[in-house]
Length: 92
Image (cartoon, rainbow, N blue to C red):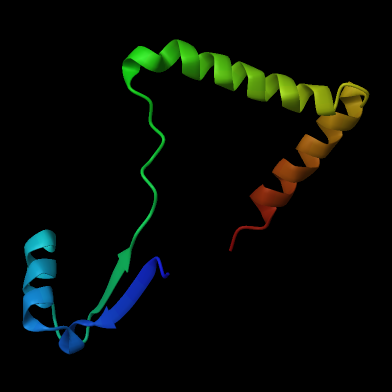
């Protein structure tokens, strides 16, 4: 089962093309590509679940911290500095 479909607008059935134009709120040219992607719903909790979200985040961070508890802080700092340097100087 596919989650992505890409078509040239000129090859779409008229009903589909009309639906896309309605969604976009504008006409589409025949040479434009139309992409449709189906993704799972975002996991955004309602405001009343903030305490649960905070607990989950704390548990996640505690698991990450446990993985590096035996690594000296200077080593962790050096790796973070190296990663930041790489990202800042690798941009096109």
